Image (cartoon, rainbow, N blue to C red; front, side, top):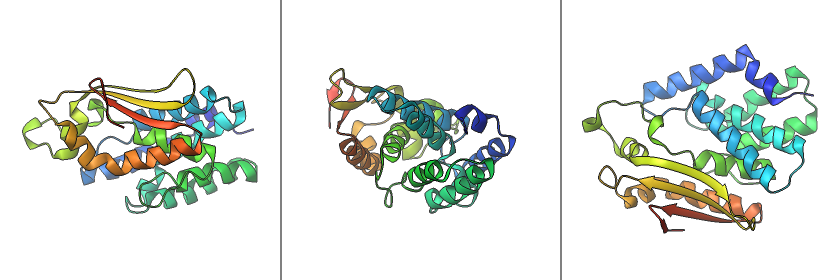
Amino acid sequence: MITFEKIKQSADIKTYITKADESLKALGYTEHSFAHVGKVSENAAYILTTLGYDERTVELARIAGYLHDIGNLVNRADHSQSGAVMAFRILDNLGMPADEIATVVTAIGNHDEGTGVPVNPVAAALIIADKSDVRRSRVRNSDISSFDIHDRVNYSVEESHLSISEDKRRVILTLKIDSGISKVMDYFRIFIGRMEMSRHAATALGLEFSLVINGQELL
């Protein structure tokens, strides 16, 4: 059985994640390295665990979360599809069963805006976990005066928390934003597609998606 820990210990996978993030750094994107994929992996697993999915499905969500951005090694454009193909080869070479490979590859191939659809629970959890990872520490640029809108919005987020309500009817992204750095409307301006995708993913899991910013429920 291929475990999440085995995936994490793979030197090849570590290289792919590192090099993919280096490419995005050269393009001016926020951090997509181990902090990001680790958080996405953790939150995807949290969602499915809380909703009562079996341990193996949760483990596949962890693996999908960890591998989901390796396609950036090829190109930012269509990175979900190229990442799915890369993940297929990696997992096949490791001896993962075909049905489990199919679940992971489908989730990775469907995690990005524009083309992604929450076609299974792992895909839905991955979408929500990925799109909710907005935080100050993802900003690489140390010169605040030269921030673009993506830098400003991410840097403005002082606190970020993803949770499922006690009645398991809602998944809630709670943010604390410094509005002196970025207005709340700036968040919607660049992330509305992500939020809409998260809403569809939540629906696929039998949930409602809620966004709370500075104590105000906006979605």
